[in-house]
Image 1: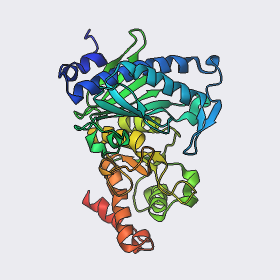
Image 2: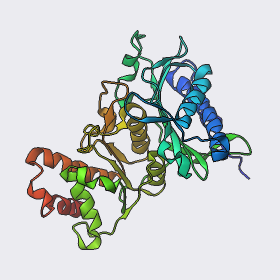
Image 3: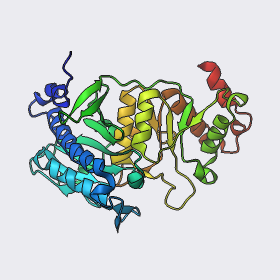
Image 4: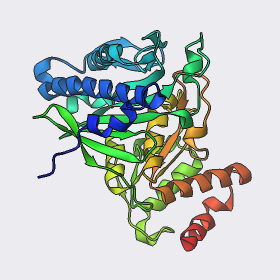
Length: 354
C-alpha cells in the first residue's frame, strides 16, 4: 500500500528553497494547517463546547462577530507566532496586526467563513491569502496588503464539513488534502484539481432577486427556463450560505457561484472581501482551470484600496463565467435596456460558438 503524501512532504521542495518567499509561504501554510486542526477539534464538539454562535460584538464594517469568529482568529494568531509572518490582516480585526519583525510574508485571512452556519452543522471554513513582503520594507502595513491578487505566493481554504479538507495553491495547480485524524495531519488526496469548463449548476441567493441588476436577473431567468429557454439546458440551483462549501462543490464537479453587487444598502460594491475572500478563491479557481471575475473584470487584477474592501464575485466553470462577463460588458456599452436582454442573441451566439 502506497504511503499517503503528507502536506509537509508536498511542501518539501518549497521549504528547501531557504530564504525565498515560497519557503516562507510553505512554513506559513503548515502553521495555518496546525490552526485548522485545533479549530476542527472544537467544531467536532459542536454545542458540547458551548454556544459557539453567540454574538459577542458588532464589527466596525457592520457584521456581527460571534464567539467562534473571535476564537478562530485567536487560534490563527497563536499558530502564526512561530511563522515568518510580518503582518496579519483579518476579517475580525479592523487594522493589520504586527507579527514577526523579520517576517517575509503577510497573511490576509477570513478565520471563519460561513459563520451564520455555526449552529446548523453546515460547512464553515478558513480562507487565507499569503503575499510576499515588498522588496523595500514598508512602514505602513497597508502598503504590504494593497496589491493585486496576482502577487499571491500561496492561497487556500480549509473546509470543516463531514470531513476536513485543505484546498491549496502555490501557483503550480490546485491540490486537495484531507485531514487524516488518526495521524493528525493533512494528506494529499488530489494532486491537480480540474474544474469542468461547462456546468448545469449555479449557486446564488435567489431571495435577493428583486435587488439584482438586469444582467444577473436575466442570467438566472434563462437558467430557470431550462430546456424550453434560450440555454436549452436544465439547471440545478445550489446555495449553502458558506462560500467555502460552494467552492468545494465546484472544485469537485463544476458549477458557478454568484455573489453580485445589488441595490440593497451596503451591497452596491458587493459583499465579499477582496483581499481575504475573493483573491484566494479566485487564484485557486484559476489554477484549477476555472475563472473568477467581479462580473466583468478579472478578480486577480483588481487593485485594492483598503484592507476590508468589498467586491462582487462570480467564479467557477470557465465557459459559464465568461458568459456572464460578456453580458455585463455588453450592458455597459449598450445599456441594460438593450435587446440583448430581450431575445438573448448574445446567449444564442455564444452557444453556437462553443
